[in-house]
Image (tube, rainbow, N blue to C red; front, side, top):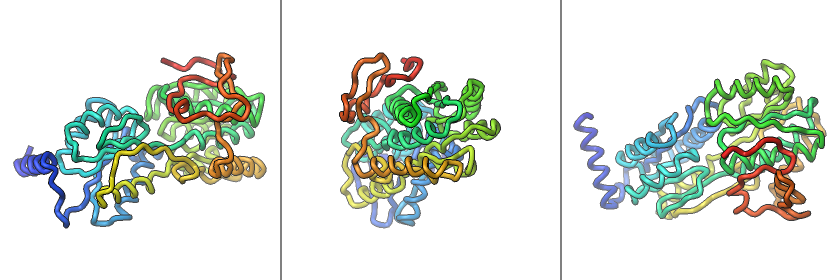
Length: 359
């Protein structure tokens, strides 16, 4: 390592250890680590759009950096350590598997602020934030149920964590309400971003007669396979994926991180940052429904928009009873809604879904 970099890192480490404030002319340094490449046009891409929004909002008052395609585990700890040592004031870690690495490094750098996406463990210098993606999945589930001709909907799932299970359940519940004959086939790929695996999963689903594909993975590979099939539709995941519009991409769930990122950077600048747990949805603008193309019939567009509007207004909850668990046991009574604690720990399928939730 060059001597100048060693000196810079040593100086930064000393300042952090002593809790020394940055000088007035120094920009606030904000770092991001991404689980995939920013060119995935999905999850990591949309987080990077939030990073760019920070730069646009604050100009030379901030300096942002990022490291992409960081595996969840020891590599994440290495990257976080390097960021903390290089004088970052605030670091966003943008994948569920970064939770323990974030907490571990936060203990070593108590004067650095950390924000962990989709996790549930906090510390005095670690906040958590996520979006109520299941609200958006309820909307596109309705569209899927109304548009399928084969009555078979496919779902490409990443990892069996509550966030993903919530999405499967919300999509299925609303597809089934729209079309009682709907079946949903779930394929687990155990990755957030792997175009090859995602493409193979899409092909397998299409071979089983699926004509609507939903995904909780980050690449556009499933959309490309839907386009090849010619009679299959899909939805943008995390980002708009509008390059596949008007079909197979007929709408999208868009993760809008920019307002949150700008607010949290401002809090660091103001000295008002504190550890919080944020879980916002359609009402707060953190979840958006992408433009619905003309491939969706007008009446279906109106129905989907009505669901989104009702969720935003607080008049409708996507998990409203009567609902049973997969084994037929009662879960929610008529009119009862799921509490956040149950949703955050969801580890079961609702009645009607086939297959088991993997361990």
